[in-house]
Length: 382
Image (cartoon, rainbow, N blue to C red; front, side):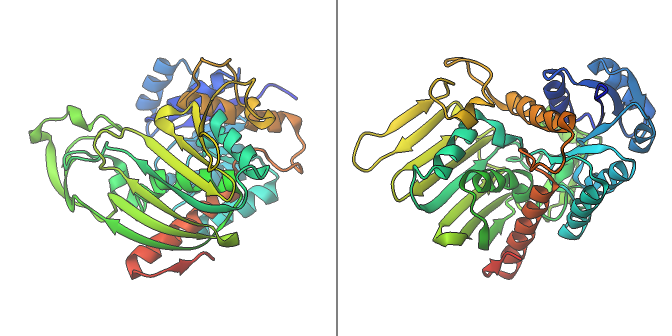
């Protein structure tokens, strides 16, 4: 197969993370698309990418590029992924896959019809400890899963002066904290346990019904650099916080807390899975450790060390024990899986990475959660 060459759309917070993960796999990124040519040329020069494009459409017309990574705002994912598939490009898309399940279902169908590789960036599956947790649950080491509980907490929108395009429903969608970070938790725990949700009961709260919107564009996490004169009042209709009761198949129950206003929590995902034989817990602020709980003997802490991990976990572990692997490494490991699959060329084989189907399922969950909060009742998952 000829050398794979990639184009990236979007250069905010997450686009460069995709770029780094690709380069660490020796994948050539040859094109960059942005909202206008001036910005594209500026960012391409900064990032060392040879070609700059004024739009995704212009980049899709380049025959040299066979794979496109979409790191753009949420409302662009569906039209851009559809355009890329129709142009015959493989697609790696940030979550959410689309703004609703009608759009995401269409993308799943279109990717299958075109026989093109499609991936959704649920990168947190690729912590070595995530893979270890999955192998333990699937091997029956926890017994029957009773409870799946945890949280995803951040503080970057704690102040009324904090701002990001995700706060605007027309750009980010009508669901914010749950769709932005709660979706990662839901995907990760589904991946680990293999259990699907049957019903949800959600409660939302918007602690800042009026925020101060900057009068000029602001990149993610940079709002704290502005002065009071730079703001205008903006009503907020999306949630700062959510608590969600979860009913899984096979009788498991759970609870998830999601917040973007929790002081001191920069990016903390936590889960605990309690089973009939044992329990496990993970904290992304200590992402090289897995706590293992027992009833009849001392608890354990398993440190990330390939000599101690399961074969599945060792596959996404690049460094020896005592050498931590973190958030950027998850992008590297996801890219390694996707591009190995592309090179192999056997698209009938089940992908070993999250696909558009997983993105569609998360949107099904998000729509049910949003409906539950709005109607104040349990909602079954379609």
